[in-house]
Image (tube, rainbow, N blue to C red; front, side, top):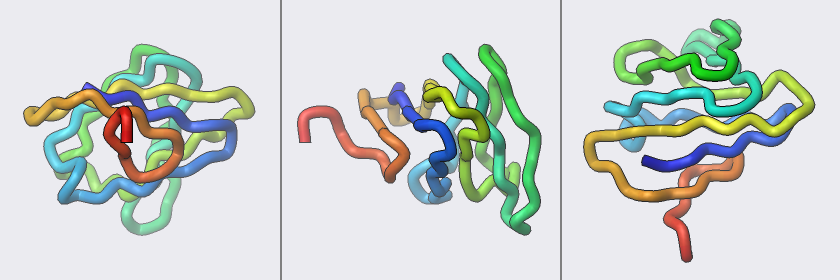
Length: 92
């Protein structure tokens, strides 16, 4: 599991090769899914869960002012902290 932290207005791209089998749960704040065609997707609040595989999501965006946090779980789980940028292993 890794934690994605998005400051207000921040956006992070979803790279299929890295996120393919990921399942996310909004732990704090709100997150909007940005679809591959550029259209805005649903805004998800606390405790909302979502799959990224096969959904056409190209980015996650924080539409609010407060920091949002999303727990990301993948089959190849490892602890990672991400702060509105591509994921970076903890300690690097």
